Image (cartoon, rainbow, N blue to C red; front, top):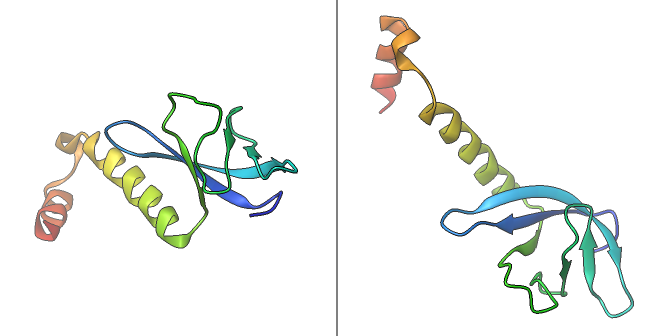
Length: 97
């Protein structure tokens, strides 16, 4: 990991939440600070400083990007008011499931 690299901050208790950000600084001892929040991480991506926070840091990968995309789609669909859709649209959705 280098300064300026894209990384993913993974947090959450019951379900993971993801935030894509950049490595802001890596100090001489290898502690990593990102542009998101003010936590510091060790070289393994774990929060340092005895924080109760279970946030971790991961390299940005296509697998994580896809998981973020899927989560966003599922969230959008779960909030959809299906009563506004036409019968044809409802049938298309029904045929998928």
